[in-house]
Length: 378
Image (spheres, helix red, strand yellow):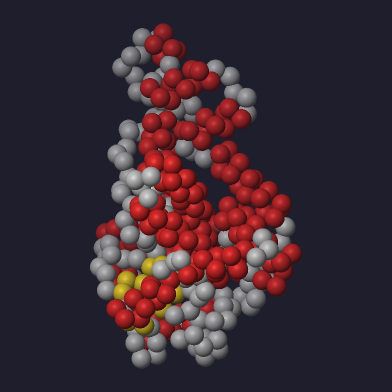
């Protein structure tokens, strides 16, 4: 399984990306953090020195003893997909892959010294071949980016936070780090979704896979356009109360919500950046050492600024108004939090009129809280 040769090639014609750098598909916020970390002298050495404190050896033994290792003799179709994904992204060393008995559809890539990919039986049984290729490509993208190192650290710190929960200051310090890591973690998932698309090269399969993870194996009952419309409705929210609830719902999560992932991937698939990669124009990994930290942070800041400017979320729109020097902020805040039309509506005797947003569109009702964070999803 760890042989570095690529004996298998994709089962259908797919474009290959020799020497591609993970910077090509990484989300700007993910890329800026990774470029900075890679430039820190001795960073990898320090983290690998921590491997003795982390349960990595135990995890490897656990999967080896209580899961099925993918190979030519076991789950051969997954073995072909894994080699195909490594071939397409030009990952020299094929990481070990295990199938774990678990009805929850999940996948993960962990490990400090060498990444390990784990998929559950629930995921294998849920997805068809093209959908599964996108998931395998997603995990190989994690391996190529080096996400597995930082993900393992996050798992360790999360477990440590539970153990020291009785120490108020100690727990607060660790949870502050965990919160920051989770925000990066969510962006790294968007990066890996893009890698999955580069491997599968089928946006419809990627969309179907995300829909199935959200709604199960009832594809005949689901529709991609309607699913993406959910993401748009979610982003628009309703008023600032919904915006705050969305923040609180996402904070404990390691993954973005599934509809959001689908919308983000669909948007990226239509960009010039994606088309340039498909045309063979992309950063090479032998240039990673020359990547500018300043430029990466500038791109990340620009991305967040664009997000605030173009977002339909009430809170983000308010932040944009504040940044733009909008007047009557007190009135805007009052209207947003109360869902009312403000003093103008009252002057017209419109106590029974429906609330409207700045653009005149009806506001949606306050939504319920999001689902609790479950096991890590593909």
